[in-house]
Image: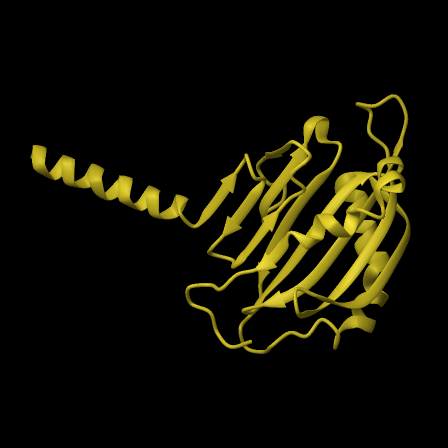
Length: 198
C-alpha cells in the first residue's frame, strides 16, 4: 500500500512539473516563454515587471509594472480547425464590427473608447491587424476618470488567434510613444511541439 501511495505521489509531481515546464517566467530578464502556445515576450528590462494572473478566460500571460501603470498581456483563442483564418480577409468585416466590440468593452470594463485606428500590418512575419485606441476609464476607486492608450496586434498561428496587447495611461504613452515599438520588439513566435504548416 505504501508503494502505491509513493508511486501516485511521484506521478502527481511529474505531471505538475511537466505542466510547469510549458511556460516560464524569468523575473530577472523579464522574459516569458510559453511552449504550449508557441510564443515568448522579453519585456523592457529597465522596468520592473511582475507576472500576474490573467483577468480574462483566454489570457495566457499578463505582466504589469508597479502600481499597474503599464500592463502587457497575450490572449489566445482556438479556431475550429476547419479553415485557415486570415485576418486580412476579414479586415473590413472586423472593422465594421468595432463599434459593437467597443460597446462590449465598455459594459465589461468601464473603458469608453473615444478613438480607434484599425490597420493591416505584418507582426512577427504574420499577417496581422494593429489596433490602437484611447479610452476614458470611469472607476470609483479613483477620484476622477483617467485616460488610457492601448495597442493590440491580432494574428493567427496554428489555428489560434493571438491578441498581443499593451495598455498604459495616455500621459505615459505621450512621453514614451517613440519607445512603444521597443516593447513589442521583444515578442516572438517560437516553434511549437506539434506545429502544423501554416
